[in-house]
Length: 99
Image 1 (cartoon, rainbow, N blue to C red):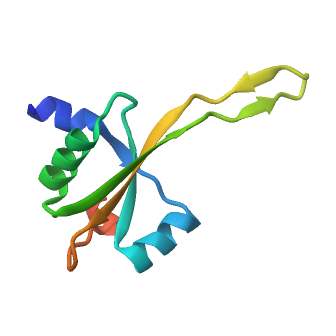
Image 2 (cartoon, rainbow, N blue to C red; image 1 turned 30 degrees about the horizontal axis):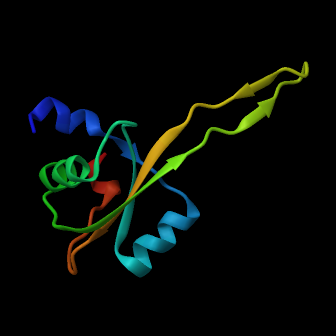
């Protein structure tokens, strides 16, 4: 996979209360990824960008929520894809040091 595709596969980390707990308990990190990304592409991108070993990947398509505006119009947020990435024992990604 070329370097340009590697940089476009991972859009950013997804930080929430659930992902923080998963990070501590299961050694997992969560990323927002491109809609057309596949498991092998995500694995290669994470391993090359963060220099870690990936053990397992789970991918989830997240449906955009439908919201009602103040004037009563229905609008929906866009759909997106997230990846739960389990790292090998002893590996970790620290997002505080990356920024």
